[in-house]
Image: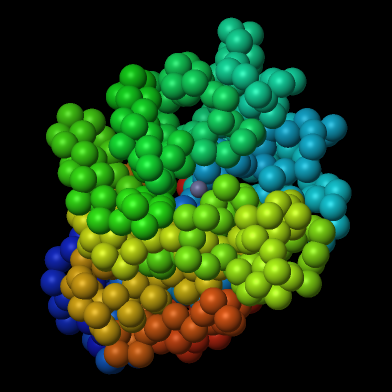
Length: 480
Ligand SMILES: [Zn+2]
């Protein structure tokens, strides 16, 4: 007797193979049969006629560390068909943080300026709280290099010394032992900018020979992107660890079209080291409000501002015009804050999205009052806008970038493919209707066309509505 039988759907198995008519049988959280199963008995039958049956999507680039503790139902993710998130990206994780540590960067935009009261001195302590929170999605956790710096150094405006490096290595090792899958870095950002290439290599030593992977928000995504890519590739090579280049993009009109060159550079490196990229399907990025970023953007939207909370959702350029001010000067007055920057080209986004080494990651910022729509829209947007409406890539290829490719690259065993023996993470969607609902004007909106989502064999979304069951697990990395 099966627990659940999904019957009559078109199976896209996550490997990139063409769709085929096949039923999926589930028992005890595992896929136990795939094929013609119409005659099999099951406690629950899900009619998938007219729907695509795919592995649950893996959001490989998130900042959901705190979301999973405070809002374990994880609505923005589950309603998109996402069943696994990789948290702790861009150098920032919740652990390790001593009880007297400054508020995490993840909660810097919380309405209460003291930020989250949660402090986890070790990754093991964070993992224990995550487990207790019972999130609705699976989580694979990275430890952030910037967080390690805050933990081990008293002055972040220089490179780490030998003692500090040893403390960071020990904290990284503790995190790996506790179940973290690797290290993330964000030397683009002020708190990590002073780190040298050698510091990154030294801190990453516990990852050697694939003991963990490294994801990198590179030092520059504009004029100096080639040099920044070479630095990241050198770090991955030096410790022989799989490398993921985060949210690959080219910023500023002078650099538009440069993806021909940057993708060739990464392809060349991929012949001799493990490297891949992730990307979100929008021409606008989002991060802290950085006045230096304003000039290279055609528009800037404020996502939050401590000085002027009512600016959230407004165009910085419109506000500057109203006040007869220069936008960069106004931005400097609104910090600390967050913003959306329109600074990429469609041509680059298309080329990067379609590239075989690129996975889908939302980079959604779940605590922004008026967030970038990627938080709620990334996966349905790829399937609806880029696959169905624009025909940029085949549906099977797009699903592969959200599932099988990601699971392989991140070492998430038994995830990302629908076959006998796989974990029963499953997303059923209507390929003719799936589409993002979130826009830059109305960024908090559920997508349409995502019908059923199963996490570890339990129903998490039923007929488009989120169920109460929360069956997420913490996933460890199994090197392949
Ligand atoms: Zn980043």
